[in-house]
Length: 124
Image 1 (cartoon, one colour):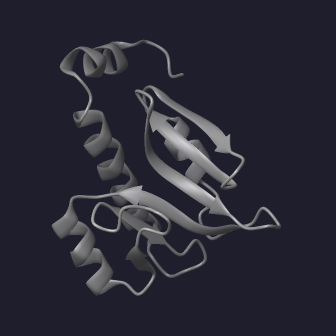
Image 2 (cartoon, one colour):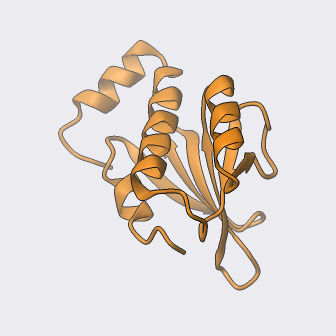
């Protein structure tokens, strides 16, 4: 995978947890119990997609500009996008997209839950 920093980057965000959805073989990243990113693994446990959530128009834009961004694999294709983990998407752009996904899902939580996550002193 071209993005070896992704796990550390996502886990550095406040309130983020990760798990392995064994039946799908996906490493999932959650904030407030809601998934905002996933690394989809094949039978050899090698990444074949990075899934993340974006506003629909923004997702459409990135899909039209970058061949390594496609509608979400095994996900709602309006809100979710899949990125080729061995593609040519610049690191900073992927970080920006992951940040947006995190903010989008965090913003969908109750105001109380958002405050609990953002005001916590420790990263989960």
